[in-house]
Every structure is written in C-alpha cells, then in structure tokens.
Length: 173
Image 1 (cartoon, rainbow, N blue to C red):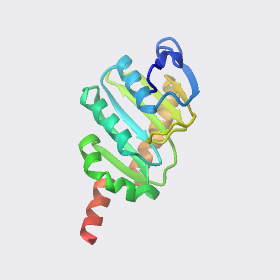
Image 2 (tube, rainbow, N blue to C red):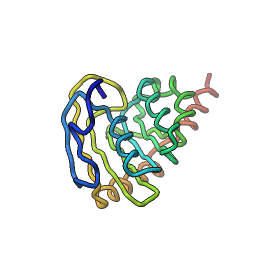
Image 3 (cartoon, helix red, strand yellow):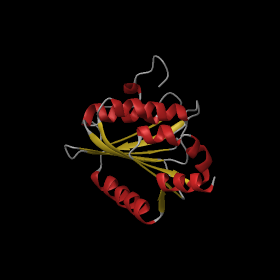
Image 4 (cartoon, rainbow, N blue to C red):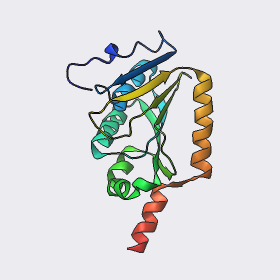
C-alpha cells in the first residue's frame, strides 16, 4: 500500500458488504490479504498468479510469520518457471505447497477456521508495480466453492509440484 493510504479508502469491512470492487494503484493484493486475515483470523489460503517477485514473496513471508496462515497453497504458471526456480529456496521457506500449471489467473481464496470464506479476483500478478489494478472482493460462499473446486482440480490433475520440478532440474545439472 502506498504510504498514507488506508485500505478503508477502498474497502469496507467484510461484514458490511458481500461484494466490493476497486481500481487503484495504491493497493497491493498482499495488503488485501492482510486486511482479510485481520478480520477472519487463522485461515488456509490458495493463491494463483502468473508469476511472483522476491518483493512480493517477502510480504507473504511476513504475513505467514504473523501466524494467521495455517497453510498456503500457491499456483504459478509454467512460463515463469526460470524466475520461480531462482526464488525456490525462499519460496520453500514461505509456502507449504507450490504448483506450476498453465495458469494466468489471479485468484485469492481464504477459508478461515471459523468457516468464513473470502474470494478476491484481481488483475495483479504477485509482483509489485505501480500500475492500476482492479479486484473484486466477495464473501459469497458460492463463488468461493466454485473457484475452490476448480483450483483443487487444477492442483490434482493439471499441475506439477514445484519441489518435483526443482528436483528434476538439479538432477539434470
């Protein structure tokens, strides 16, 4: 988030609105994740993106250190594999489950221990840019269920765990 910006400028508390949208260059999806976790508590998180940057990975590392994420599941695209493999040691310290697939989606799913669910559909990759980005934030259980089912199918049927891919690359060198 840009200095001096409050997330409340763009988003109301989850309990107040089922569906919210924003278009701004002031918020990052990591800001939105922290905001969600502060409201719903300890959660399992699924996130998809085309790619991830070191700066963004640092944010996720510190979010996880706060103890609000009980498991983080990340799906990145095959085409960003070389960049992803360069970050592999750091990714392994931050994420429990990382998968590579044909993926261009940017989805964040949060399922709290309480049963609350939040879905964020965003234009932002897990990289930091100062570009305009949009998102839909919703607590609609039907939207969450549909995307969770699709994401679970992608993980189980159409992805490669990053650990396996990294092991193959080391074996080839």
